[in-house]
Image 1: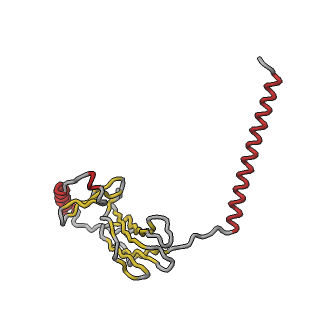
Image 2: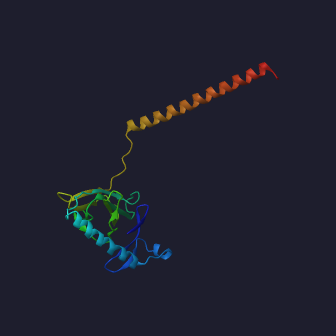
Image 3: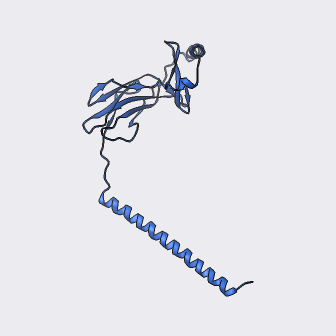
Length: 207
Protein backbone atom coordinates (compact mmCIF):
# COMPACT_ATOMS: atom_id res chain seq x y z
CA UNK A 1 0.00 0.00 0.00
CA UNK A 2 1.29 3.46 -0.91
CA UNK A 3 0.00 6.56 0.83
CA UNK A 4 0.53 10.30 1.09
CA UNK A 5 0.16 12.00 4.45
CA UNK A 6 -1.66 8.96 5.83
CA UNK A 7 -4.17 8.68 2.95
CA UNK A 8 -4.01 5.68 0.62
CA UNK A 9 -3.13 6.38 -3.03
CA UNK A 10 -3.03 2.80 -4.31
CA UNK A 11 -2.25 -0.78 -3.35
CA UNK A 12 -1.30 -3.93 -5.21
CA UNK A 13 -3.76 -6.81 -5.33
CA UNK A 14 -1.56 -9.89 -4.81
CA UNK A 15 -4.18 -12.31 -6.14
CA UNK A 16 -4.87 -10.40 -9.36
CA UNK A 17 -1.27 -9.11 -9.53
CA UNK A 18 -2.38 -5.62 -10.49
CA UNK A 19 -2.34 -2.07 -9.17
CA UNK A 20 -5.59 -0.88 -7.55
CA UNK A 21 -5.94 2.91 -7.31
CA UNK A 22 -7.87 4.34 -4.36
CA UNK A 23 -9.60 6.71 -6.80
CA UNK A 24 -9.81 6.00 -10.50
CA UNK A 25 -8.62 9.53 -11.30
CA UNK A 26 -5.22 8.84 -9.69
CA UNK A 27 -4.40 6.29 -12.39
CA UNK A 28 -4.80 8.91 -15.10
CA UNK A 29 -1.92 11.01 -13.81
CA UNK A 30 0.51 8.32 -12.66
CA UNK A 31 1.41 4.67 -13.20
CA UNK A 32 2.91 1.90 -11.11
CA UNK A 33 4.23 -1.48 -12.17
CA UNK A 34 2.68 -4.12 -9.90
CA UNK A 35 5.50 -6.63 -10.53
CA UNK A 36 7.95 -4.42 -8.66
CA UNK A 37 5.74 -4.39 -5.57
CA UNK A 38 5.19 -8.16 -5.79
CA UNK A 39 8.97 -8.70 -5.80
CA UNK A 40 9.30 -6.49 -2.70
CA UNK A 41 6.51 -8.42 -0.98
CA UNK A 42 8.30 -11.71 -1.68
CA UNK A 43 11.45 -10.32 -0.04
CA UNK A 44 9.42 -9.06 2.94
CA UNK A 45 7.83 -12.48 3.41
CA UNK A 46 11.24 -14.16 3.39
CA UNK A 47 12.54 -11.68 5.97
CA UNK A 48 9.40 -12.22 8.05
CA UNK A 49 9.98 -15.97 8.13
CA UNK A 50 13.54 -15.38 9.35
CA UNK A 51 12.39 -12.99 12.12
CA UNK A 52 9.63 -15.40 13.22
CA UNK A 53 12.14 -18.23 13.58
CA UNK A 54 14.50 -16.01 15.57
CA UNK A 55 11.65 -15.06 17.95
CA UNK A 56 10.65 -18.74 18.31
CA UNK A 57 7.28 -17.90 16.69
CA UNK A 58 6.15 -15.80 19.67
CA UNK A 59 2.59 -14.62 18.89
CA UNK A 60 1.86 -10.92 18.46
CA UNK A 61 -0.03 -9.11 21.22
CA UNK A 62 -3.68 -8.49 20.39
CA UNK A 63 -4.39 -4.76 20.59
CA UNK A 64 -8.15 -3.98 20.50
CA UNK A 65 -9.33 -1.23 18.14
CA UNK A 66 -10.76 2.18 18.87
CA UNK A 67 -13.93 2.76 16.83
CA UNK A 68 -15.57 6.03 15.78
CA UNK A 69 -18.69 6.51 13.64
CA UNK A 70 -19.37 9.87 12.03
CA UNK A 71 -21.02 11.31 8.91
CA UNK A 72 -18.96 12.47 5.96
CA UNK A 73 -20.59 15.93 6.03
CA UNK A 74 -23.13 17.87 8.13
CA UNK A 75 -26.36 15.87 8.25
CA UNK A 76 -29.57 17.18 6.70
CA UNK A 77 -32.72 15.08 6.68
CA UNK A 78 -33.46 13.63 3.25
CA UNK A 79 -30.04 14.61 1.84
CA UNK A 80 -27.75 11.69 0.80
CA UNK A 81 -24.72 11.27 3.02
CA UNK A 82 -22.09 8.69 3.95
CA UNK A 83 -21.43 7.17 7.36
CA UNK A 84 -17.78 6.48 8.16
CA UNK A 85 -16.71 3.76 10.59
CA UNK A 86 -13.12 4.54 11.56
CA UNK A 87 -11.37 1.53 13.12
CA UNK A 88 -8.05 2.63 14.58
CA UNK A 89 -5.03 1.55 16.68
CA UNK A 90 -5.40 -2.23 16.45
CA UNK A 91 -3.20 -5.24 15.82
CA UNK A 92 -2.96 -7.71 14.18
CA UNK A 93 -4.58 -6.46 10.95
CA UNK A 94 -7.53 -8.86 11.10
CA UNK A 95 -10.95 -7.30 11.70
CA UNK A 96 -14.56 -8.04 10.78
CA UNK A 97 -16.83 -5.02 10.33
CA UNK A 98 -20.60 -5.17 9.78
CA UNK A 99 -23.01 -2.28 9.23
CA UNK A 100 -26.41 -2.55 10.92
CA UNK A 101 -29.50 -0.50 10.06
CA UNK A 102 -32.25 -0.77 12.66
CA UNK A 103 -30.46 -3.88 13.94
CA UNK A 104 -30.28 -5.65 10.56
CA UNK A 105 -27.08 -6.17 8.51
CA UNK A 106 -26.60 -3.89 5.49
CA UNK A 107 -24.33 -4.78 2.56
CA UNK A 108 -25.62 -2.69 -0.36
CA UNK A 109 -23.26 0.14 -1.29
CA UNK A 110 -20.75 -0.48 1.51
CA UNK A 111 -17.04 -0.05 0.81
CA UNK A 112 -13.78 -0.13 2.73
CA UNK A 113 -10.08 0.64 2.53
CA UNK A 114 -7.22 -1.80 2.91
CA UNK A 115 -5.43 -2.01 6.27
CA UNK A 116 -3.46 1.22 6.67
CA UNK A 117 -0.25 0.96 8.74
CA UNK A 118 0.49 3.54 11.43
CA UNK A 119 3.86 4.80 12.64
CA UNK A 120 3.41 2.92 15.97
CA UNK A 121 3.19 -0.52 14.28
CA UNK A 122 -0.59 -0.60 14.69
CA UNK A 123 -3.23 -0.36 11.95
CA UNK A 124 -6.28 1.63 10.91
CA UNK A 125 -9.12 1.05 8.46
CA UNK A 126 -12.12 2.94 7.10
CA UNK A 127 -15.55 1.49 6.25
CA UNK A 128 -18.22 3.50 4.41
CA UNK A 129 -22.02 3.25 4.23
CA UNK A 130 -24.10 5.51 1.95
CA UNK A 131 -27.39 6.44 3.65
CA UNK A 132 -30.35 8.80 3.57
CA UNK A 133 -30.72 10.52 6.96
CA UNK A 134 -34.08 9.94 8.63
CA UNK A 135 -35.47 10.37 12.13
CA UNK A 136 -36.75 6.76 12.00
CA UNK A 137 -33.47 4.94 11.20
CA UNK A 138 -30.57 4.11 13.51
CA UNK A 139 -27.20 2.69 12.52
CA UNK A 140 -24.47 0.66 14.20
CA UNK A 141 -20.96 -0.27 13.17
CA UNK A 142 -20.24 -3.75 14.55
CA UNK A 143 -16.52 -4.54 14.93
CA UNK A 144 -15.04 -7.92 15.81
CA UNK A 145 -11.35 -8.36 16.59
CA UNK A 146 -9.16 -10.83 18.47
CA UNK A 147 -8.38 -8.15 21.05
CA UNK A 148 -12.07 -7.74 21.96
CA UNK A 149 -13.90 -10.03 24.40
CA UNK A 150 -17.13 -9.42 22.47
CA UNK A 151 -18.22 -7.51 19.35
CA UNK A 152 -18.01 -3.74 19.73
CA UNK A 153 -21.00 -1.70 18.58
CA UNK A 154 -20.72 2.00 17.79
CA UNK A 155 -24.12 3.66 17.46
CA UNK A 156 -25.24 6.58 15.31
CA UNK A 157 -28.62 8.21 14.82
CA UNK A 158 -29.87 11.60 13.71
CA UNK A 159 -30.20 14.16 16.49
CA UNK A 160 -31.99 17.46 16.15
CA UNK A 161 -29.70 20.42 16.94
CA UNK A 162 -30.24 21.37 20.57
CA UNK A 163 -31.59 24.95 20.85
CA UNK A 164 -29.85 27.29 23.22
CA UNK A 165 -31.49 27.40 26.63
CA UNK A 166 -32.74 30.72 28.01
CA UNK A 167 -29.85 30.75 30.49
CA UNK A 168 -27.30 30.18 27.73
CA UNK A 169 -28.84 32.93 25.60
CA UNK A 170 -28.65 35.32 28.56
CA UNK A 171 -24.99 34.45 29.12
CA UNK A 172 -24.16 34.99 25.44
CA UNK A 173 -26.01 38.31 25.36
CA UNK A 174 -24.32 39.35 28.59
CA UNK A 175 -20.88 38.55 27.21
CA UNK A 176 -21.67 40.47 24.04
CA UNK A 177 -22.76 43.50 26.08
CA UNK A 178 -19.63 43.37 28.24
CA UNK A 179 -17.36 43.15 25.19
CA UNK A 180 -19.20 46.08 23.60
CA UNK A 181 -18.88 48.22 26.76
CA UNK A 182 -15.18 47.42 27.03
CA UNK A 183 -14.70 48.54 23.44
CA UNK A 184 -16.53 51.83 24.10
CA UNK A 185 -14.50 52.51 27.26
CA UNK A 186 -11.16 51.75 25.57
CA UNK A 187 -12.10 53.97 22.61
CA UNK A 188 -13.11 56.82 24.92
CA UNK A 189 -9.79 56.59 26.80
CA UNK A 190 -7.79 56.85 23.56
CA UNK A 191 -9.88 59.87 22.45
CA UNK A 192 -9.28 61.66 25.78
CA UNK A 193 -5.55 60.95 25.60
CA UNK A 194 -5.45 62.27 22.03
CA UNK A 195 -7.24 65.50 23.01
CA UNK A 196 -4.92 66.06 26.00
CA UNK A 197 -1.86 65.48 23.87
CA UNK A 198 -3.13 67.97 21.29
CA UNK A 199 -3.77 70.62 23.97
CA UNK A 200 -0.29 70.15 25.38
CA UNK A 201 1.27 70.73 21.97
CA UNK A 202 -0.77 73.92 21.45
CA UNK A 203 0.36 75.35 24.83
CA UNK A 204 4.04 74.80 24.06
CA UNK A 205 3.70 76.39 20.63
CA UNK A 206 6.11 75.92 17.76
CA UNK A 207 9.78 75.21 18.55
